[in-house]
Length: 494
Ligand code: MN
Image (cartoon, rainbow, N blue to C red; front, side):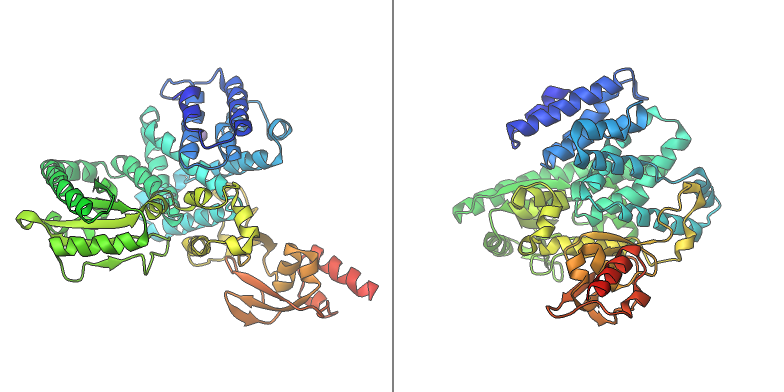
């Protein structure tokens, strides 16, 4: 990939924005000019590939520029101040976030735990890592860039020695792929898992590959035939649709087989048919047409439009006895649902007002997509049940988060507070005016006392009352110096 390839992906940006990406490219290529990747390629190829994924996801120019610059601080003499000077605070903060995320990794000791089959301890460590990732979710672009970075690193993993290869692939399966899944980014999740699979489970991977080889080819040919039948039928009904076969990702097939007694004959979506139409009404219409054409299997019709999956996934699924008695899964969705299923949280950029950041969406309450809040909640769950904060691993040589908790506003913004903080601290962290007019508070939808200590991942809503004002006893519950000083100054004035 070169600069030209990247530029062809940028047709959705304004000219100024394209200039910003060019500028980031020159800056990065100047700093990386003497470096090579382990594969022997010039380093800048990695920066371009990472930026390319961000452009494919149609994120804003700042995110693309930050992706281009993401390794500059890590690998060259350039520091973050220089980036701030050249590109401003927002881009510098993203780059800084990506650099910090890069320091969170599975260490050798953890792999040792795994080899000794100390699974509970290993899982505990993974949970901690996920928690730390969560802490960085303040700007979701940081995480998306990190996922793109990881995908290219996985593609070039053959350049790395065996021990590191295993560690990085394991990290990808345990941390990055689940994170992509939680963000609804099905395409990245599938890629990351399939890239890691052969390194983490080499024997199982080979066995499965041999097992499905012949079957896959036959099935793909058969699906091609069905595709023609469907297209013809839909055209007759006046529906313009895109129909294609989708081969199941290897890793997800392997996991599914484990739940189906390893019986390949019971996997109906080895190759599935995907029908993409224009709107919801057409989805149901197509389902009707398909069921008239071929008999559906009992209990296999799933309406993920009426009831989306927790990560926001929407589609209609059905499994039918198609021609010659073959059983086939068919997935029906609108173009928008398809984009959401593939790109998840990133898809919001092009279905929102294209202002770029999620903060923009969050600030405008009427524009907060419900699904985004679901994702944020899922992310909170993803960090696992809360263990004591003292358990932060010393290997990571940071205790930065050990006494901090991360609290969500109802709109998905994260506030970083000390452990033991109360709704009062939270209110002042949001805004002084909100602190000064607290009428009550809800934690995860339930009314609570203002003295209730908050827990990591809580969603807190402050109920503002016009005539409310700070009380002296609030000083007993306020933990942050910010809240305490604001309360004191208010009480002094009155
Ligand atoms: Mn990188």
